[in-house]
Amino acid sequence: MSRVEQEQFDRQLEKWQRPALLVGLAGLALSGVGLFLAPDHFFRAYLYGFVFWGGLSLGCLGLLMFHHVTGGMWGFAIRRVLEAGAWTVPLMALLFVPLLFGLPYVYVWARPEAVAADPLLQHKQPFLNVPFFVGRTAVYFLIWGVCAVLLARWSRRQDETGDMSLSARARRLSTAGLVLYLFIVSLASIDWVMSLEPDWFSHVYGWLFITDQFVMAVALALIPIMLLRRRSILAEILAPGVIDDLGNLLLAFLLMWVYLDFVQYLVIWQANLPEEVTWYLRRTTGGWQWVAAAVLALHFVLPFLLLILRGALAHRARTLLITAVILLIAHVADVYWMIMPAFYSSVWPIHWLDGVILVGMGGLWLWLALRYLHGVSLLPQQEPQVQKVLSHE
Image (cartoon, rainbow, N blue to C red; front, side, top):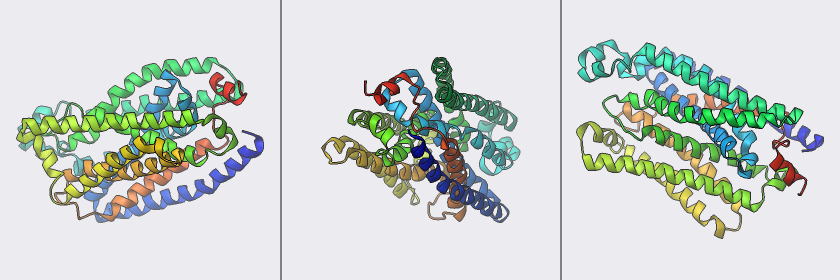
């Protein structure tokens, strides 16, 4: 990227940064009013917003480490966006702190009177208790934050110095970090979401979260890349084969997600145990069945058809962009459908805090991600594979 193009790109980022920050601060300030008016729903809506944006951060981190381990030109095309998303992990750690003050509003196992009256909660108390929960979460974010910050810093330093040893260092960190990521995200999904209903469990729940995070990370990265694909530096690397690779990657993760979701449903339906089927009963009655239908249509059926048929369509890149936007919109409903039925039997009492907190966190998330991209080339130009493409070898 030439100096003039970089300056133009930075000016465009600045136009988005300030509004994103103002929206984020205004949203969280307004949600503070809701804390006093309806503290119970505030913390539930706060968990919803946190799981949504935290999942995007962790998905970007996991996919970034996956690329460092496996390589491939597809990863170089979206690496900067993944680094920007992973850069927000420390922000999500900070945003988790307010939730600690409202654990009894969210988790039944955090209420001493509920634990005293339920033998099942007493049995699970060695794991589901507030001190251990807080300690585990601190360890989670420490590991995630170290991986995210180091990978982003090494990537930027390599662009500045051309030190090829930084790539090997990032690969070694990602190899260990990816293993830890798979294990820790599984635990975090149990802690943050599955324990909302401690009488229910699923053996594939953690893998569902991991594959969904990867789907959303690819979708998120595709949006700016497809919008900026005509810029000279991206136009050279985004050959039809690279665009197809990104589409195939998105399709693979999407199929893995729906397969795990179907297996979980099939096993619970076939066993027909009361302590298991209640989870689905809460989410398929009282209006929640319409949310479930919308999630199925927008999170799988429509994106699947677009990805399968994209080769026959005139504009593959535009089709990928539309698919990515649909998936992110569907993810808003998907996370809501996963969390809120644990508290409400009916879908219709949607609270204004749900949207305000989601938008507020999103503004801060977007501001920090854009700030990372300021002054950074859209491609890691010191990577040998990228240099070969840019030099037309």
